[in-house]
Image (tube, rainbow, N blue to C red; front, top):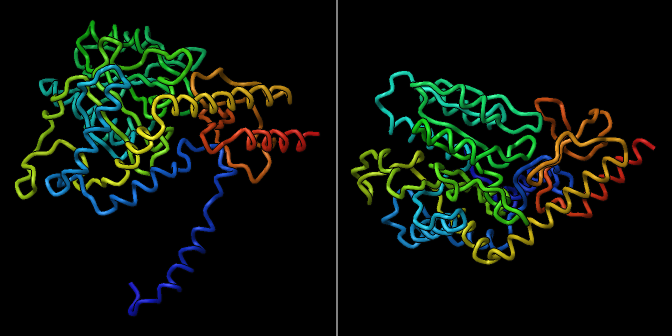
Length: 368
């Protein structure tokens, strides 16, 4: 800490200099987050000081969180779903497995089954909770092999995980088939829809992944991804509205005497931002956003293939992957690479058609 404070002008000059070192979103093609919607920013600023960890002090903000969960519950075909706003998919996934373990506390050496494509947050969750993580292989189209997953189940299995919109390839696992396995073995079935949860419902032909599928126990979804909310904002939803009470611990000096959340202090601002975007755009507005992102994904795939760069997969959501050498991608574009060394681009709302065309132009010129 400085011995003596600096002027406001000096301070914000310094901050502006650091901000200028951040990458420009015009060239970021690898992120599952995007520039927040203007209504999210405005709502966020209205609720900057609110703390959902002590909700009795902020009953209005708490009401917004309940509305957000209700909005997602309705979107996911379970209006009475329980849940709460998390910091994002990692926290939601940790809490889902924590809940699965609490519900099967009689199992001394519990294991969970996840796809090879599962987000790295499940490794964190298993490390924290002392769970054995069993990885089911993927099929040729990069979806979880349901048959192989079923063969991994034993008497110590407490949970099964499927992904709706995988991070690397944008695929939806066979949720209905996995749900049957979960029902047959009485397993907690968690769907990680952190990305796909705000894409799939708005597709022309939505793929069943949510509570409309019998056997789905919980769902993770991130409004700060395709929901264009401010960071951080995720949600964990449960089919049974009160099941999260299994995680309650005493909080005697707060305005509530028990809490089941993972974090103590929880910002209300991004929750207000998430709800603001959903209510401002409505279903039709979100469908338009998703339709645009999917069209841009298709244009990107078609354009890359005209340069002899084939797709690695045909995605279900707006993630495009290609068999491409790293040297073929010109700067200043920021892309990413999958574990299988495929070029990966996420066509988020800030990745407009104009940006896609500019990228394709640079790809073409670099190999002319």
